[in-house]
Image (cartoon, rainbow, N blue to C red; front, side, top):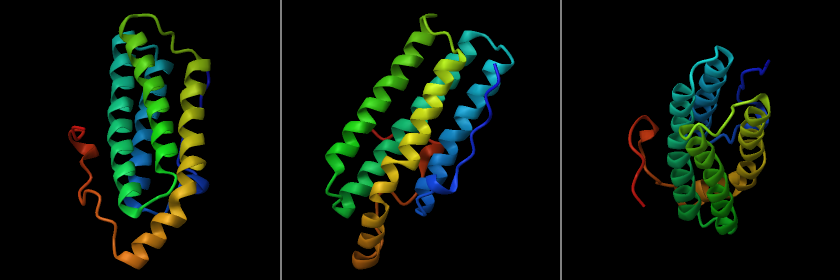
Length: 156
């Protein structure tokens, strides 16, 4: 199975430094999973890698939703619903892996890859102009100043 590592593409960058950094972290975690599958690591290792993607996605989605809420983004409900669907899918894959019911085939990896790219280069690009305008007119949007993607996911 030959899958190429993901890199953040220009059309995936939001220009919002902390969001782009979080995107790079999620992509790095995907690439770790890809390497583990390529080296035929055992399923427990795959599950741990999927859990790391879930952890990063949970925090990123929480942070992004706070940013959109603070900026008054009019399509927040739709973006939040997309996050819920994506998180439900990746969490289900992690659970299936934990139960030994998920084969991380090239098809599954392509789905995860597509999920990442379509969200970052598609949905996330739709809010950039709005957030940047809010940052310029009202001063910086304050959603969590630090980025604890390096730490725990906030409750709630």
